[in-house]
Image (cartoon, rainbow, N blue to C red):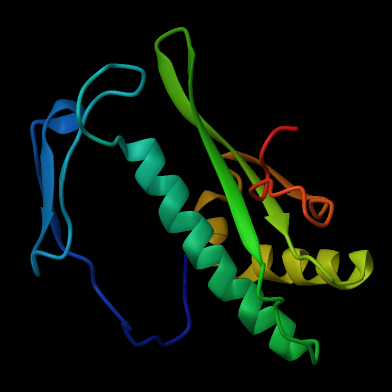
Length: 154
């Protein structure tokens, strides 16, 4: 694939030892975590959780850019609930993803336009396009005073 001239904005450097039952540390020491396989009682996080955190953080940044281009701003309560599935079919493993976006106070059509634009520009969305089944949805805002966290089951 040919890409236009680019400049590298940032390079993350992480060394992982022991795979899913090991540890990972970034070259600057800001990330230093234990890893445990998903669904086990191990003390660490897992790659799927890290991917969900990274993608949702990046996606919110892409939404901020999209909102600005549409002449608006993201509401203070903007949030993304990301779910990453580790799936298996025979000997093959693959990922699935759901991003549930909460943009309280925005008209639904504006919120949807922001989400759609963000999905076109977010580097994680671009990297997974055609490789990962992704479902995007807008969450309904919790009722005033119900105290529910965004995306929490009611």
